[in-house]
Length: 134
Length: 500
Image (cartoon, rainbow over all chains, first blue to last red; front, side, top):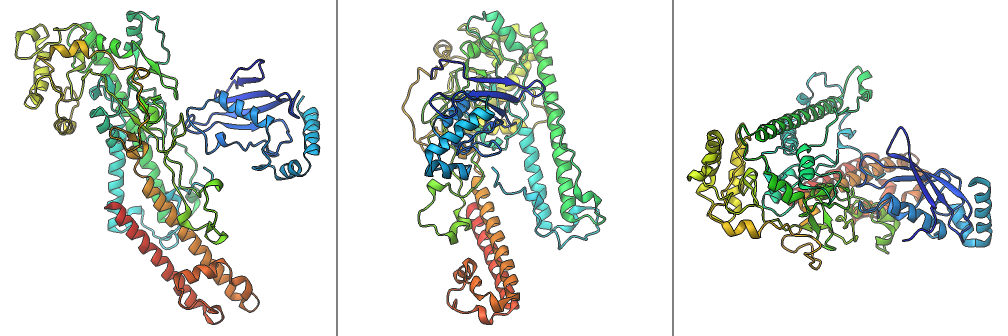
């Protein structure tokens, strides 16, 4: 996978090297375009046998990300494999921003809105990006 | 997993019956059989801890029988099985990893790095969580809390011992290594420079831990990817869990949804290609040093030099003491080792076990001279390169495939335990539900005919209709007791079957 621009930045924390501050740029063509989303990433003791723990810190309107920033993504749960890396995980999260999946929701109201009135949902997502992810 | 069952030791069941046992010794309250079982469990745990100590005398083709320590936890695999597989050369030994590797390094540079390697990763003085036990404040401590405390103390003891043993093994290795280097005396189990170089010259990276190992790593059975033994023994099944949505049977009604038999446990998927039932194969390099081979000290790239027999004057150049020791080692195995052929597996293993019983591991590991096999040294030194040995994918049942379930066979017992625990819990919930309904029987007949009514019928389907109108509390309680004992019986039978 080629990355034309540096769109994901990862910085380890000073006092805990298992803890990272991550910034993901909203993918172009999505309602999150132009936003900079902050996430926290933590490598548990059992990493890489267990998946890293990732959470959005920036508020985001997305059917698979709840109010606490928790992410519903198979590779963070049952489909985690120790051969996956932080890089692949972050790319998957970015891909999730490009293609929300309201049929497997974590934030129910957002997913409902996404299914019943997609135009409106996308509009809200764009507004939230402007309000919170700058 | 969030839905993992709580630790067994915290199990609240039974605590009320023995709550006020005033005895200071927790074991007093337990039956004799239980005590026996406890003792046996501890013995097993001690053995497990001992098996995880890396001792340089226990080596196979330049690697060891216990992990280096990249992972602090998750070492609950069957150490006896893994050790045996390594000795049989069916699984790569635990090699000491290199953090960096550069093909440009000269032999001298590589050797210098290799000689600094430790047997085990530095162990921090494990700070076992000293969280306060809530039971400390109780005047009467329950038998369970006493057991818990004892268990904790035992765990701390184990980890202290393991740190001590590893430190001893380490210092012995360091000492013997420096003595060997000074040339005063040699030890048969200190690897020769040639062996070290042969192993690590073409080191490759394990794609999971990113550390460098000799190229004879295990290969995944499905997609032929390398994986080091230390990462392999980390893999394990997830805890028993209800099936995922996509896997659930379409006809599962809400009634059976929580039914304990629905808990499943799935084999580990390949970390690389996600194929189910992960397993690896291993092709050993033709080195044959250490257990089941010649002393790693005597591994030499120059043909003829290792051609050594304690009975011939060729070996006389060595100091007399080491000569004596070596010949002792040879003598032990001489009768079994037909010259030039690897010893029979069973012989080596039993001998190895014998030697394990001795007080000192020093020089006790069986070694077989490879004398009079000149052709062997020249041809065999190439370590097969995994990329070159392309082979198709193999089924999990193919000979030579080592699956995760083989080194962690406890999953079946775990599943059984989780199922019976859930069954008991739901039975208890049903009982509670029933008794609470009885009080306001007059107006709640309709709610009663729900799931648990049906589950009653499962037990006693002959007269399931309108029983609720004339069943007294006692009768229901008796039924519940019967049901629980039936469950226990069922569990006992299953366990017995599993044992066989």
